[in-house]
Image 1 (tube, rainbow, N blue to C red):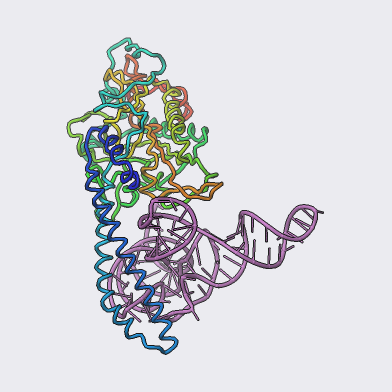
Image 2: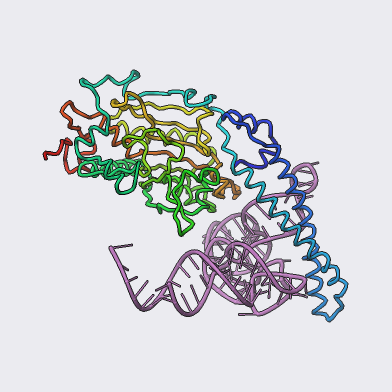
Length: 429
RNA sequence: GGAGAGAUGACCGAGUGGUUUAAGGUGCACGCCUGGAAAGCGUGUGUACUCCAAAAGGGUACCGAGGGUUCGAAUCCCUCUCUCUCCGCCA
């Protein structure tokens, strides 16, 4: 959520930053709402002060056996007036909050301007600066490889749950688990604390991180309880600090969590319909930082490096892209995407998205820190990034390390997690 | 799922309708005392919003959440959430 005071004091600047995302926003309306709210608040609080004064006085008179009838009479008229004012005030507050909570975060000044993904800026590539050399044979798509190996069963997924669900079998299931364990161990080595959060969350959490109220159609909801399946571990893990006041000395918090993620992909009809790229359910290892405001910029660089390192250890070619203003997610102030090279598709595909949300989520969550020196309270900054999306990593391994005979070489670092296995081979029927 | 007990400030804990603008204690901060420390004594000690040009200083709300009763609610009534204990069921 944006700071109402910032909108009040610097409306032109806020408006121009919002416009850089590609869409105008009605700050006039919010300003009017907020002003009306404050007028109501002043009036209400004046009456409340009077009410409290009268009540105190009546109490005093009662004790002294005095006559309180005049005060009681005043209360007769004041009471109903106050009640209706309080209702109006609350309605206006809710209206203001509703209007502000659908505004996206302001892009950081360092974010490249642009309309859509065309405007994104490539920052670096690994291992070299050129596109990876093509394989010595025609590269297959991961779904072909996976089906031939007998490790990806799309039909079974559809039978059990529907389109965009897949069953992993044998070495595929094990590879998925190996990736999760490898990533968790790597990040733990780099100082992250492992967290296993709930996979279902309440509405407040989703409002806190920004998925609600705007993007409810992207979420799976439960029927009999007010709970949603998490679209990312970012939601439960970031919300660990909701309504908390953290001691400055305890920051930064750095957490890593494996979860399955559940997305309805409502707006993605027709996109990536084959294969594992876009599923309703997938595993992801997520990195979350909670920092002091002045250190979040540096934290984003570090977090992104921590994600890049996973790809490097696996030997997967990738590039790092700075999202432009028009391509930023709702809560993000600045985002780096990591895109892995997929030979089967002949293109880079997103495998990680690392964002600094500044105080945007913190304000929604009321997550704060207490300064050591001044004992003052202020909002923390929150960051999150995939480290990495496990399903897409599995795709990248199949496509990058495929052999002409249909086998797939398992990256060295994963072999300890695969019982020493170094090669996935087609099932002998 | 059933029965019972709870939820009060950083923490413990008093408070069953009006001098409670939340007692008292612990902790923390500062000061006094001391050669230094401890003890002792004193002072202070939440969050959010808002008023004021700003500062100083006010005001309002918040005793798990939401409703209700009342001139007035931490306190009485209703609903819900969570915690604990016992029982049942269960990975």
